[in-house]
Image (cartoon, rainbow, N blue to C red):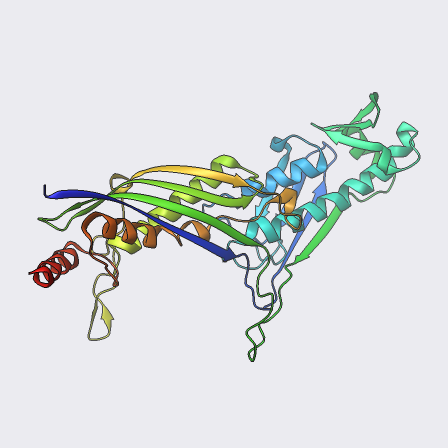
Length: 334
């Protein structure tokens, strides 16, 4: 048979954020309007990973209003506070915490006024859900968010909040190598099944199982999308992507010459979301962006070894490299 199948596995752990003591700060603001809607402002750039959706979900949950009532304004240097870069798998964790803090602050201002309307001694006796503020243990006593917000503003209350979150890390001791360079960590395992054509050297990744500890998943569909996107990048790194230089200049500098996986190259992906509550994250969340890329390459390389018994140590693993490795193996056996 010219086609052989193999299975490979790889595990990883990954530190969230900039790490190693580098300043990792995110700030957000929120304002509750007369109609009960809210505007969140954050410098967090949504590059397509869905951070604006997640931040809106966090704001809605913290304020106790419908998701549709929240508007998230991002990455406007005139109006949004600094939230650091969209990198290092940090926006859900760092900016999520900042948004949660800002919303809690604004909500408590509103509750401080509302408790006088509902005859409650402290704001701890109030809760809010789906745009209704009600008395804990006596939910029939309630007021709508729009009415409460409007009356609070007319009474002189300013319903705004600002939250800043600083990620905890320390620099590693250069002498001992000891320290706490990251917090929190993400963990995961991926298992790849491949088919290798021993006549052409072509590798097809047939299936990928991806189990990822993400803390609590704020948006499960978004998490699955992040995992699948990370695997696409890892697959490209393993089998396709390489920068070709000629006299110091990149010669494959366009999508027509630089190979990346298309949807037709993608295997069936089975994401497995492992939820473990992270006490420092917003609602227990951590992050999933970059970690999803890390184990894909070694899982594929290990699967190739399991299929045909050759160990490839240089990326990308092209058909030519596989055929050369197979010929070398045959020569050793003879």
